[in-house]
Length: 213
Image (cartoon, rainbow, N blue to C red; front, side, top):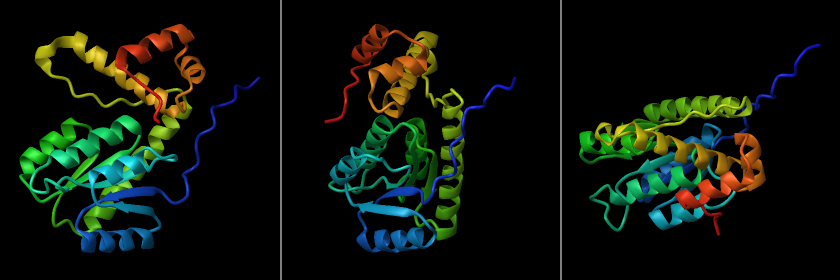
């Protein structure tokens, strides 16, 4: 008797990219190139628009994000807020950050917060397409892992906080990934994690998880 293997997801048809760039000329140029390469592209120019798009289903699989967004285009705050929001609403999304600002500081903070890759402006089309290709492969591979009952977590831990806080962060990330992937269905979260529903509700309350409006 053979045991059926879990079905692996097929490589999807055009990957969806959310392009967050306030320079409309550059945004149009990049969008055209990505569409020609077979991506499904949606373009937004500031944080509020990005938040609205991320709240819709299906959420984008990849994001190309300029950190310098209005109304504070000379800083990184708006772009980093978009990065945080994207990973909360869609933990599986792969975010490639673009910036023309302080390279070292921007790269460190973006990677700390969970960005997949980092490119310095002006980035060539070849480097952007290469980064997106890597992101696609990782996204697809993690989908295969999920189908096999595994989850890849990305954790940045401050050493001085100790293992207890690190474990709590990993716990929260696992719950968030499962919560979003299960379509905010408590019964499905409980099934996937092998937990009683009561325990799922406990963790949802503990970390303040809510269904999106």
